[in-house]
Length: 541
Image 1 (cartoon, rainbow, N blue to C red):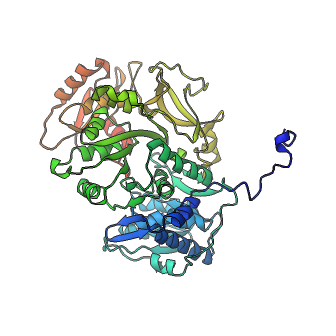
Image 2: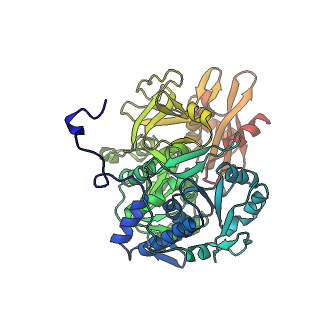
Image 3: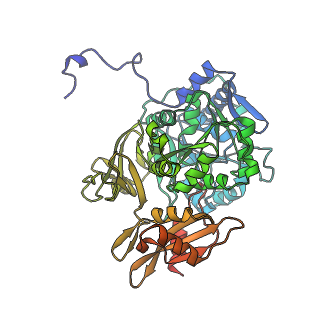
């Protein structure tokens, strides 16, 4: 019952005491307070916050003039370049919903996304014009295609009706954009990887985007005016909400087209980068880069998520002065929603113990109201013993609205007032969650559950191992046995027998791999190892 208590009498929501939460307001404030501060850097291109705000307002104004508005979808396929950053503000300022498309997808899936999202505009980076041109042939309707022109990539073919700068020239830099009518209105649409079929469209709202953007600052303890390097794709969960985070932080976004060790270390030095995000595979690449590259002389922090990072990788980063913060989340939770909150008393522990603590995913983000590990059928929480596995569940403002046009999948994901992650983990006595595996990646051998993550962590401790992934291989006797796929470090050697023996020396014998396959590992565009590919290979061995 509402409206009967003394605090409900004549205390109504009005324009004076309520406004919809939206990350768009972060840009407006920062442009007003710090107009001359650096906002976006991309090679020789340098923008201030006044510049970025004006360009975003131009984009919103131009889209509105072309009939794009509330609830329409504007798609973009681009690398981490300024235009991609601007789209995170300019598109929703028009009332439309931003759909940032994975740059590694093939034409068939790109076409599916454009059709499913009912995109009315598509902004295209020249690097991906070939794939987009093929995708457009499969569409059943016309849409406005806008070409980005980028001097750093000259090989692309122009396929659109106009360029991005021509579109901006149509817009008003003083455009008075409206706040969303409802903070529950959609701000972005992200598609899952779709490894077992067509991808699902995950809908974000303004409220969740604003709250997670601010949670990133609090979780990471980011000082104002931080310098953030874009190694994480902005298409991935809207860059974990960091385009909006950096506007709230009034910091600088350093854009990077390609994720390679040399340009990353150069950006560390020349741009004085303070923060960056990346999958464990990016950390591993940086840790194994030539020592002569590692000549930065200031504190850098990295936030990592994806597959749980091996303790050895965390130790390698911290040995060269890069502080690691481990987070966990899904596309359905706006990116990171759980973080390994660090405690000062842990600083006195040995390096290997500190790394083991940081491997844990941790505790809920400040914007997440609920986190539990529970039986996936009964939703009964598991004991906090660090051993009993259950499924990880979340609830709160940074859980998606649902899957676009897919009520069945939405209902399946939301159970008993919780979002079911599909990840298996344990709850430690101190309340920290640790992922043990994806439910589909757990190996059941002779009736015993084997965590592929646990086996991988041991393999990474071997001095010759660069990368490792473990999946189930069918076995007539045991049902399944662990099969390891390993890429060795350049110039290093190890045999199958060496690695199996090493695992048996460092863990229970039944958990050690029975098979080791050597070679490069298949990865997604965000650096995650594609275990579904490896499972197929293991079945065919």
